[in-house]
Image (cartoon, rainbow, N blue to C red):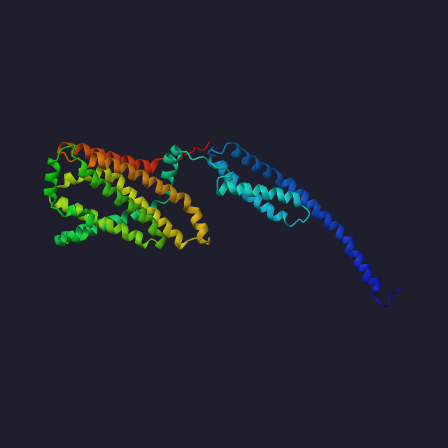
Length: 362
């Protein structure tokens, strides 16, 4: 007989659903075991690479290994997300969480370990590589300075009376006619360098300020970094035009090239750092917060500032002990020395720290 209340059929349906639950659970368990068995080798491989990096943190992995490491990190991260759907696998999920966290720290930091600073490696690899990584900012800094130089030269070329308007008070001696200054400098004794050292120190202080300000002004979205570079370029343009027009081009080259071959690039690197800051302020091409964006460039900024400081120190030494001695017989040697320095700096920044291309096996 059929139950008139309808409870009989409902009871039968409930029993049917409970009977179907068991195969589903068994299928889930089987899928989980199959999933773990399939992915376990990749987890072990990633763990092995992490162990190798921890044991030898200074080892530079080849490109293929770095690519494999990143692939394993991505795959393990995806496996962790999938494993979260299985409520019962707490231990495996915790293991993967630790594994992914360690891999992340190696990819985006120093693996959680403090890596000692190695000056030699920093000088030959880190600084030139960082410089090249931001080459476009350097080019813009370079152009802003020399556009200003062209403007200054053109301005006094059209109206020489404007010369004194471009010369700052601390460099008022540059208002003197170049030929008169050259005549006086060439007659001075070689060891009479009290005034020359004073002048050198003034230039060192000025160029250090310019380099630091060019970087710091990047926090104002780079506008005043470009203005500062342009302004200092106008001073160089005025001096260059003044000396060349008065027939003192050889003196000018022998005077500026020995220390200027390092001093001006240091200023350009300061502007480069400022423009990197400016780009970070705008946040183009990223959704990261400002603090996160600056954390990504902090190391590069410190590296560029450190490199510029080294260039300025060496330029100051050369300016004090070579550039300010104006005996005519030294001009060819000073020009040759400055040219050699400039070529060496260009080769260093262009090629140092580059990895040799790896030839693929046939």
